[in-house]
Image 1 (cartoon, one colour):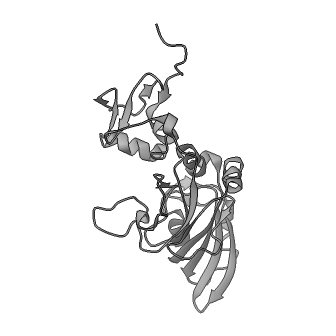
Image 2 (image 1 turned 120 degrees about the vertical axis):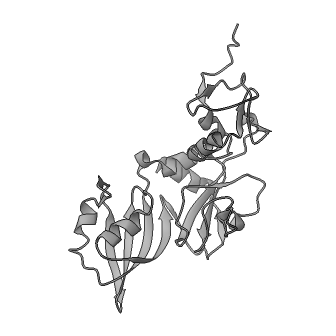
Image 3 (image 1 turned 90 degrees about the vertical axis):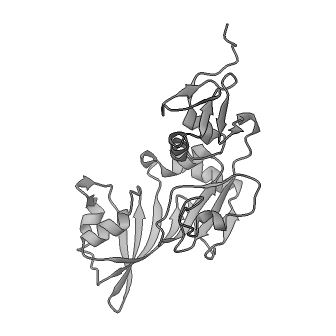
Amino acid sequence: MQNSTFQEPIRIQKVIAQAGIASRRAAEKLILSGVVMLNGKIVKEMGQRMIIGKDHLSVEGHRVKLSQQKKTQVYALYKPKNCITTLNDPEGRATISDFFPRTSTRLFPVGRLDYDAEGLILLTNDGDLSQRLIHPSHKVRKGYFVKVRGIVNNETLSSLRQGPIIEKKKHLPVKVKILHTINDKTWLEIFLKEGTNRQIKKMLLHLGFPVQKIKRFQVGPINLGDLQAGESRALKSEEIKQIMTN
């Protein structure tokens, strides 16, 4: 007879996220790599579910225990240029983990920035918080300073404000304004409510303006502030609440 204290079955990737091991998207990659085991057997189905308190889940040989989940922590990190937004790189390039703050909590990056982009990226041990920030349905606003080659005028940017079409797919309207021009370069301020792969580079190149620099200065209600490249700071509890209610 089933114990009445058992919960309803829950997707394994959600359990991994709740335990602060990885975001749900990263948890799916862990499953595909064959390092996730349920009741002693390798998990092979992405949608497989488990009952917390009854089933036993492990990741890379370590038992997942939600009861030992630590308090939600979030850090703001200034990701330097020429750095991969992963925890390790087989090619030996610098990764974002090289700049993680010293903490006993296992952190992972929320979303990503291109190798040659710099600026604000959040780190957390909370998979649900990560999901809220990166899933397109939540439309979390992200702000960027972007330098392009060429002189841009407002009329040229009208298609972005109406919603750019990238690779035959319509995207959400982009908030964009011209900051200033220097010689043959233009600096733009861009806000996105989605962030598909290389979106900024693709939509500006389509208009004839190759991107030369990208610096993200805002994610939701959190700003880069005075952080310098490679520096980080812990978010206050009030800031974490703002993220969850934004």
